[in-house]
Amino acid sequence: MAGILEGRTAVVTGAASGLGLAMATAFAAEGAAVCVADLNEAGGQSVVEGLRREGRTAAFTRVDVTDPGSARAMIETAVKAFGRLDVLVNNAGLQHISPVVEFPEERWNYLLAVLLTGTFLCTKYALPHMIRGGWGRVINIASAHGLVASPFKAAYVAAKHGVVGFTKVAAWEAAAHGITVNAICPGYVRTPLVERQIADQARVHGIPESDVVGRIMLEPQAVKRLLEPGEIAALAVYLCSEPASAVTGAAIPIDGGWTAR
Ligand SMILES: NC(=O)c1ccc[n+]([C@@H]2O[C@H](COP(=O)([O-])OP(=O)(O)OC[C@H]3O[C@@H](n4cnc5c(N)ncnc54)[C@H](O)[C@@H]3O)[C@@H](O)[C@H]2O)c1
Image 1: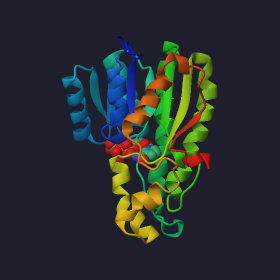
Image 2: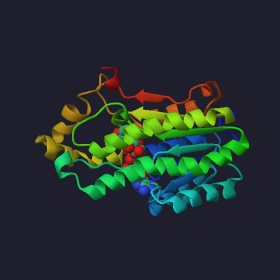
Image 3: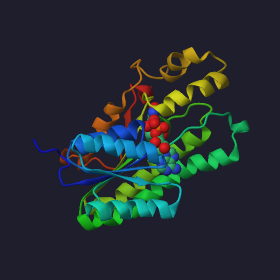
Image 4: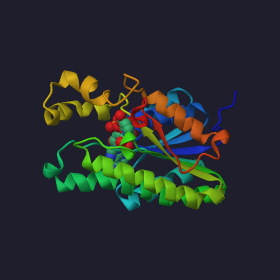
């Protein structure tokens, strides 16, 4: 059976790891030619090799989404390689855990640059190609932290709330061209980004590392387990489908009930 993205091209930022890897894999399985874009060259190349071994169409592009020239070059490279651009996922990201009073200014600036400005830049350069094609899907990976706060994540929470706001503006501007723009707002997903913050969470909360998942991460969720990357990828695939063509400007939680409270 033909996949729903047969003949389409997708760019996924941060696709060397975690959620981006899962979405690149899911889009490729649906027939898309996928541009795996990441700062991490070795990781991104190995994702592409894996996809090609499965008979998928994929190419790696190194990108630093904070750099306008790099973001623009990523989009142009994908269009040159595959002839068109239909789907953009703004997924590249990172975390920094610290109380506000100790939050290093350069980390604040960098998180905002990656998470918020990066999303703006990639969307800005992708939209003209989607407008030309008369169809498009922009999916911004925000977070439950785009809707609610947790302590010690000032830059991340501020940037993700900004991503949700930007999503709404872009959705309004793009709708007339057959393009939807949505934000996915996951709870905690089992990825390297989550594994890397366990030690810092233990330190700022003053608890043992072994208690972080149960007492901090799963505490706000009604569903008491970490999500799996494939669950987020399945939602992204749905947003690319035709039945989702009226879903736009939405910030969709997939968070085990966290933001229902
Ligand atoms: N894992 C979770 O629980 C969770 C929950 C909600 C939202 N998110 C969001 O999902 C996205 C992916 O997170 P993940 O958990 O898969 O993390 P991850 O660390 O596994 O992957 C992030 C990827 O982004 C890349 N990246 C970082 N800075 C970049 C830059 N400047 N330019 C290009 N690439 C860059 C990294 O190299 C890495 O491959 C992030 O935006 C994150 O905020 C994750």
